[in-house]
Image (cartoon, rainbow, N blue to C red; front, side, top):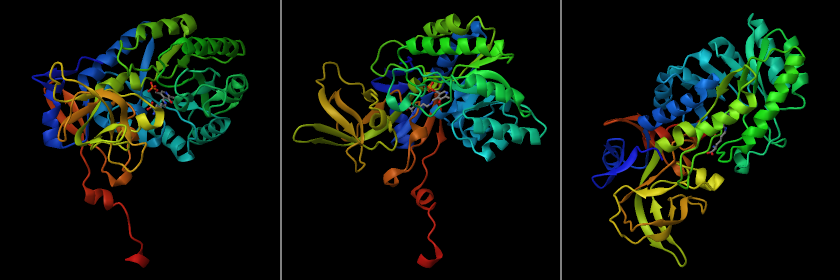
Length: 421
Ligand code: LLP
């Protein structure tokens, strides 16, 4: 984990800010992100791909808080978005529209019209319907939209089944074998300019061999498209680099860049990368308070005020997120094996299982780490739990970047129809 979450004076800090202090002022649970960690990761990725002529379009879905987007925008990032909502956030946070790529399966007509009217830089086409519709909408506006066609290379990303996207059976992209025909069709349409091949084979990849295979297939495709007279000038290589939830060294972006160089480096294409998790996962923690410690017949439960609605990844993907006490454990304290669970009425409501934790008591704070990606963005208000606030730290400064909504605001979204009033 980047060295930004450290124990100082017996308490876990984010950069120079004590998480216990934030807890006292904001209440728990809350998400806390480190600007320094995001910046360090961005720079590392950018440095690795710069020699290849690579640009970064941050995958907004990983963490779409506008303060996070603005942090990345200042570093020069573009954005990869998959909905009009994400595009609007990115624009609002200061990312220039021309540096935004609009991807995603199932784009609505309204969304495609929005991309054209806002000056979004590129649309990644995932179906022939996308292609025909975009061309029609663009031509009606007298425009030609630069497009990539996202191909499905039929490669196993060797990651969790629910976040694997590049196998033939997945809904994503256009079968790579059909791509030449679809590119030829695109070249005939008035409103689109096919100039890039895109792919994204999955998320949380820790073994990079699937990249080698997938990028190799894309290189072959580019050569055959060029032979057919279609000028491919860009490649969009997606995201997917995993982070070490179980500890261990940070992902080796230099090794990743080397695979890129070996497979597509001689094609003379401008490269675009869409990292999400790599940039933000390790930059965030979810902090909660222990409500109860409960000994069951066979297991010991630490019940926190955070829950599966705040961080769904353990439940949904069997993801492992380390849990640390905010108060530094005393040396030699004996740990016991516990399940860290939330108050939600479901057995699936856990954040960690079979985890060795030093003794904790009600009132103690716990930090769930590696929670900066796909944490807050996937949260819900299940059990009428207000959305968790988000805090951004920058050195010794910190700010609430999304406040906790009041119960009135949350409940007040419902409307009672006239016949019940
Ligand atoms: N580009 C495209 C087209 C994508 O679909 C994704 C992620 C990314 C880039 C960024 O991937 P990353 O670098 O973050 O792995 N909710 C899941 C992850 C879903 C990822 C979906 N697509 C999780 O919590 O693990």
